[in-house]
Structure formats: C-alpha cells, structure tokens
Image 1 (cartoon, protein in one colour):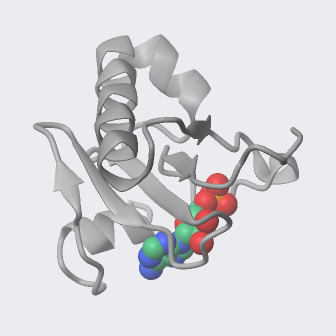
Image 2 (cartoon, rainbow, N blue to C red):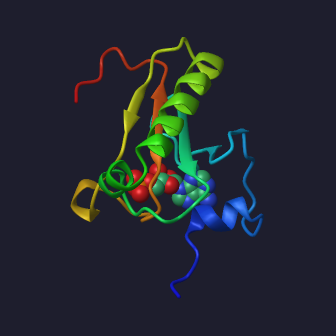
Length: 113
Ligand code: AMP
C-alpha cells in the first residue's frame, strides 16, 4: 500500500485544513500557497485517480461533480467566473498524484495562459 495522499490526510483530519465545501464525493479546501485572489482546490474524496485523464476515463460523473462544485464555489467566493486547472504530470507542475482541480478567480483578466 502506498502512503495516503496529503489530500486524504486532510480529509481524514490528520493534517489541519478547513474543508470549505463538500458534496457526496468531492470536497474543497483553500490552497496553502494561493496563486490568485481566490485559489481553491476541488478534490474527490477517493484517491483512486491520479490525474484528470484517469478520472475522465474511469468516472466521468465524478469529474462532472468536481466541475459543479467548482462552479458553486466560484459563485460564492468571487464573481462567478473562474479558471479550472488540472496539472497533469510532473513536467506540468503536478506535485500531488490524487486528482484535484485548481479553482482560480478574481483579478484574472490580465493573465495570459
Ligand atoms: P499540484 O502542484 O497541481 O499537484 O497542486 C498541489 C497543490 O496543493 C499546490 O498548489 C499546493 O500549494 C497545495 N497544497 C499542498 N499542501 C497543501 C495543504 N496542506 N493545504 C492546502 N493546499 C496544499
């Protein structure tokens, strides 16, 4: 068995972090190192999928549940507009291999991809 991911440890209460929202299968926290005025992470409770490609192939409904929670949070925490980022692979900046979406909002108008 591999070690539980940092997100599983947060969900289990082993690492302190406020769970700001949850649905049946998904939860959300604030990113500890925010890259935008609003920077949240939306995470499946299950660590079964390492990245969004595996998730889309294995459980598209769970991916849709993540997008829905991201949309709800963007409406609550900013003006409703948001950027949704799934870093996929270490060369793209992925550091935690428990799939998660970065929800970025606020003051993004001048950013380029
Ligand atoms: P990624 O680099 O796409 O795998 O994203 C992992 C994210 O998790 C990074 O943006 C980190 O800042 C964030 N992170 C790591 N540890 C914690 C933590 N304890 N609480 C909240 N966010 C965290």
